[in-house]
Length: 287
Image 1 (spheres, rainbow, N blue to C red):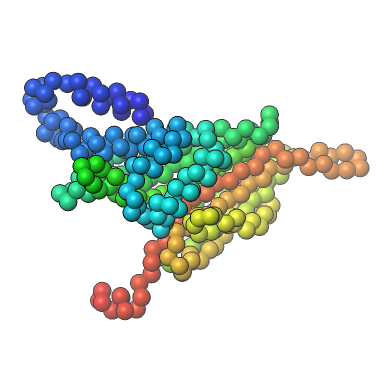
Image 2: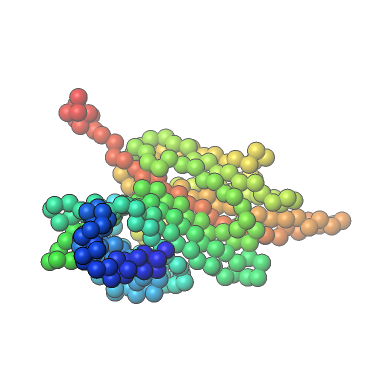
């Protein structure tokens, strides 16, 4: 997709100015300099990420950057380094859906971002990582150059599946947003392969850095193929992840023993954005 966008942009730049002035596309703002620069900036982020060019990638952010999870540029930089050191072959892509440029040299960009990576483990247990997020970028123009000053993730799902788990149609349901200190339900659905024993767990944890290991309580996957858990969102006004863990085993039964062999495992994660709950004083003011 990014190559296609680059080709289209290149063709637009090659178009004669006289023709541009006669086409309705010019009036729609597709030739707007700020819009073009913002598209170029976000597409360059994808290019730098695919090349794991850390310095170039971070240079697209404002020094005062803070995202909706509360990560400043220093913390975000550490997170990027950790991910790229663990998985340096991730393929990133971005689809820019809408750009709004304001009169005060700020801009808002709505995007869908995806990533993909093969995760080799063993011949029958290789894994795949996939991720998709609907995000909003906030930019500002500083000394004539656009920089990312913040961003927020509206919805996000990430999975890492190995072996036979790669073929599962896994559905993890949780609210996209919830008030702080509020009860909510998360559910996991999938149909295990034939003659397979499935176990699973659902946990939740705050979005933080460094990320803690969520406590897993595995149980046999129910016969109706739906596992549910009830959580209470944290009161610290910090966004959360709901994490589903899956294990697949097959039994080799002989006259004197039962041998279980792992055939697949994996994780699926979805984001739950936590909205600060209003205090009584705020409620009174609203009334």
